[in-house]
Length: 266
Image (cartoon, rainbow, N blue to C red; front, side, top):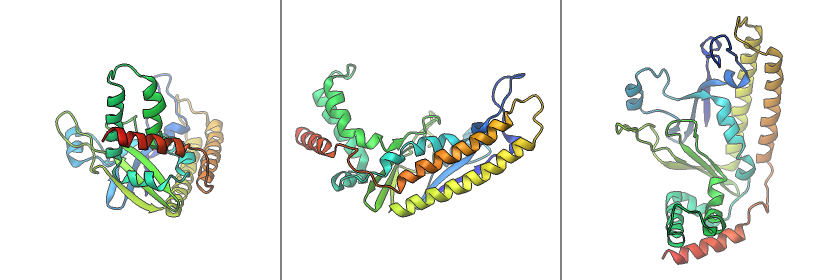
């Protein structure tokens, strides 16, 4: 599900300007990332986009993997919360739900340049459950939006990946879509990713500690310490997924707002 390949140590570019170059744990996580759900691969650039750029050495998202981990784990507290069946059904066509919510907003807030009480008290609340379970890969040009919705022992992953460059080329191989799997399988695959990633990062840190970096500033003791801190934080976040939470989201209020929205846009 979560696939990665760390960059070789000698191919990682240090940060900063000449005479002030440095490298840290975050920088050492530089590598390729791609996600697979069924027959779809997220974070895979299209052949046309790669040919257009000409100098791209990998078809995948090449960035510091720590950024993905930070964005993803931040959602775990919400992902573990099971949502009502009515709203889980909406995730089959999330675009329609968002489109209907936008219509509702336009009816009640004609002046789109000024945020009103309606925007915050009604519109934002009725859609909040969707963006609280999503991250947008905003550090990438045309970065995919990924959302995760649990209903008891099922989870649906929804992605928006369709982005076109100025010359009309589709950026990613995957089209907008979704994938459903068991929640337990989802959690196990995240655990497997974490184990593999931190094992390989441990080797990366060991190599960095034993290497002579010359004028590049590397706090080797801090690398070792931060690696252990990152493992601890990931494991504590991961533990959330094994513990179901109840009572965090005011579903009664959202259901009432959704019912009102449905009636008003008819």
